[in-house]
Length: 66
Figure 1: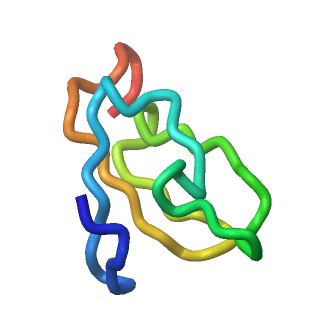
Figure 2: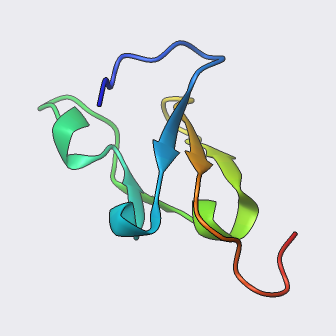
């Protein structure tokens, strides 16, 4: 999986990748932003408030969330 994405590209996340944190392990660098939990499985698409990385959930949505 490539971690170099543009603002319009999304990193696809599956149930195996949950819980989702940004930065992800493969993105961690010494000067990265604080680790933040992102509820992509509830929202479908979420953008990190620190680095603007876009994540898209590819699994089934949780009941009650559309």
